[in-house]
Image (tube, rainbow, N blue to C red; front, side, top):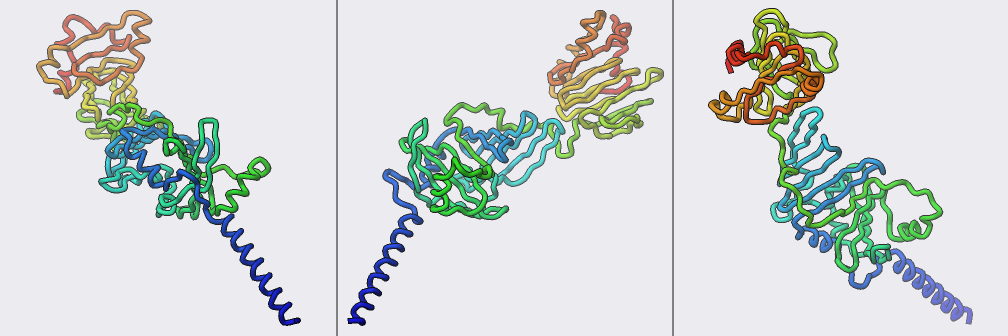
Length: 381
């Protein structure tokens, strides 16, 4: 009898353990969600679009706008002056304020038939996104905009393991956003976090990528790298000079004598002495030549913008035919306070003509024989 009792107790214990195991497996393993598709199919739907627009948020406050256009073009804007452009496997990092351009391999390029790595747009340096691509939804919840599938996967990155929480619209199977959380979070912990979200102070996500628009026209110029940008930040150089000519960098106090082929950076000031045959020709990276005569002071702001403070400067675009340039010389005089203020504003240097600009102090030099006394006599154009 004792033996039968012990056997019965052992059987009950085994059954209880089996039941606990089954319950644990049911709560820890992903449960099938009706109408669900693998996350790879969600991304495949986006790859069929002509254009995509995303908003990437990192560290809560840092945001970037991202545009993707088939086949394989990406632009990522951190600010109006700082952005990245990718075409195929190449990437250009651009800082217009510093006038710098650097080139490297694109971190978003997959291969010729898939082009853009949409998971890579999170900028988390994921080593293998296969667990996320194979993932099936672990939940289905309601939002103000409809129902969404929730995908969950732990991936390895340069900063360690992270958990990606991805959401897709149930009706269209279209991605809505992806959120990256620090550390590895299994399904049971994720469910607990969902239940206790209003009670716990959770750390902010590392990144969040939200889909903003699909198939909205994106202008071609968003993916064009300006030719005037340079790797070392130069906006031009001194091509010729004579007499006494000096330069002062933006953050410097002293003036330095100018020599030929000296590089110009944004914010540099160039000055020619008033007395004597002092002149200089500056060649900007936008294919524009500036010729300064005696007693001239200009502020070089960018490859396409300069500010004349005193004296006279001749502006010539080297992209236009010479006969057209010679025919379009346009002396400009300053004889009123409004004109003086206008002359102090930035002169846009892009164009296909030659023009001579004068500061108010130089208005007496503007006369009918201007062409004969033009600065081009000092420096051959």
